[in-house]
Image 1 (spheres, one colour):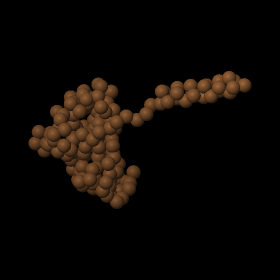
Image 2 (spheres, helix red, strand yellow; image 1 turned 180 degrees about the vertical axis):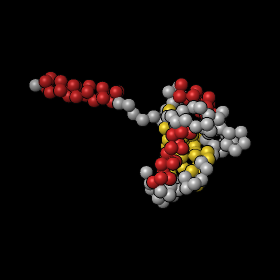
Image 3 (cartoon, helix red, strand yellow; image 1 turned 180 degrees about the horizontal axis):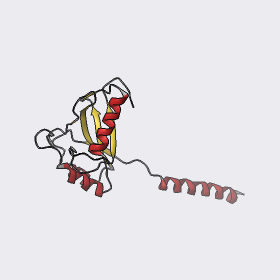
Image 4 (cartoon, one colour; image 1 turned 45 degrees about the vertical axis):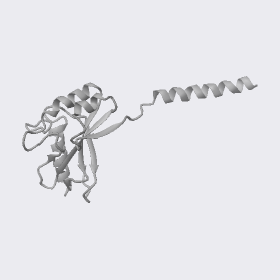
Length: 159
C-alpha cells in the first residue's frame, strides 16, 4: 500500500517541477538615462543582466506642452538631439532585450487635461517612439517595444 501511495505523490511532484520549469517568469528591468555615469545604453545591455530597459524619462508632455525627453547628460534634445541612441536601442533589441520609453518621473511637467489631451499624447507616443511615422523621432529610427508609465504627478485621469 505504501508503494501505491508514493506513486501519486511522485507524479504530483513531477508535474509541479515541470510547471515550474516551463513558467515564463518576468525578467529584471532597469531604468536607464538619469545618471550620466551609468555608461551607454549599449554597455548596459551588454552586461546581460536585464530583460527590460526603460529609457527614462519623457518628462514633459500633455496640456499643450512640447514633449521633451530628459536623459541627464546622455544627449541634449535641444542641441544635438538623441537620435544617436537609435543604434544602441537596436543593439539591445538584437540581444532580446525589450527597450521601453518611460514617461513621467518625479520631476516631470505633465498633466492630462482631457480625454482629447490623452489621445494627443498617445498619438505622439505612437508616431515618435513606437510603430508610427514622424519626421522628428527623438530617438532616431529605432522602434521601441513599449511604454512604461512612471506617473508620479498630476491628478486627472483620462484615457
